[in-house]
Image 1 (tube, rainbow, N blue to C red):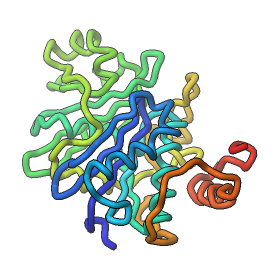
Image 2: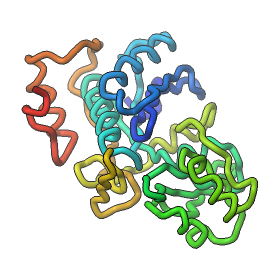
Image 3: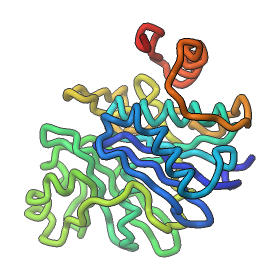
Length: 281
């Protein structure tokens, strides 16, 4: 099965909210938000089930899965990544990762302008990345994804016009308007562009593996940041196409004692520092 066969299911739990969306026939046909990413471990699969039911498709009809590669919460990244990897092993479909910052910037729909997406990294720091999107689909990187203090943005982005989006732009709106002008802040948006034909292509960006196999430049809850030698919040080995073990339908139910060996097998295949059996007891 190629990456373009069938609907694309997107999962993201790297920031304060978690998201599930289904891309089909060139548009988002169903989506659901989990209000707090801290609930994603128990609410993500039910949200997937609700989205698939709303779209009227069965799990075996999914053509590919894309997962948000960060930057963001360490635990949140693991939840979506492990969920996505478990599903591709069951369904035999490809898995891809995308930059949440690039998706937020692309969703603003301001071709020709520099858009900088900001996610809150706490303590007056932000995860930042800036791009310029052409009407012909071309994408120019203006600021590589990095973890910066808010005061560093002017130095890194220069004096040209810049528009800001994402949760960090709302949190530091006054600072941004003072430095870049009164119209600098666009606000928050979905993590994927609605109806944007480039979304599938952007979901195929080669991710980069960070510490713990989840992502570099991420901040764990409680203020601990794990950079892992990179600040781009993506993974160092392409997730590319991962073969699945079967193509039979799957169901959603609570974990059982008998499931642990398979859960640990997936955990060991997915992460360089996998959780141990005692974690699940």
